[in-house]
Image 1 (tube, rainbow, N blue to C red):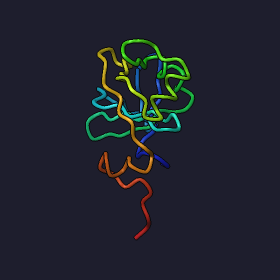
Image 2 (cartoon, rainbow, N blue to C red):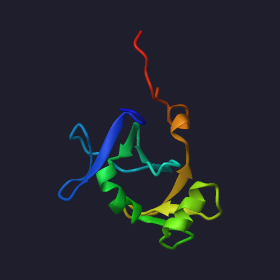
Image 3 (cartoon, rainbow, N blue to C red):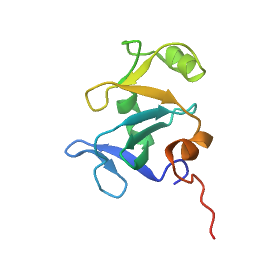
Image 4 (cartoon, rainbow, N blue to C red):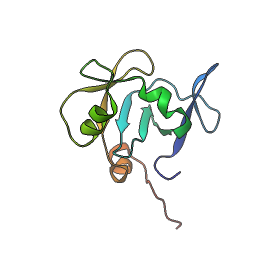
Length: 116
């Protein structure tokens, strides 16, 4: 995978599923990259949200308790003020800014592995 070891998608019957078919589990941390990539960590699993489910997941974002418009979201990604949260599994989780280059070191995986 280009950004993370797994890709996650939503399934109406089963909830959050990895590209392997396994359930994601309870999300512990949420990250948002400058390009709009939403990254979820559930235990040891780190997964990027499938682009096809991005609209649904972005609807669960709030900045200071309100749904952000496009301009507010872009301003936050650019370092703007405000506390962003994600309510994709019910209880709000703080969203952290991270670049795709920082993902591996921050979350403990090698983003672009090289053959031995």
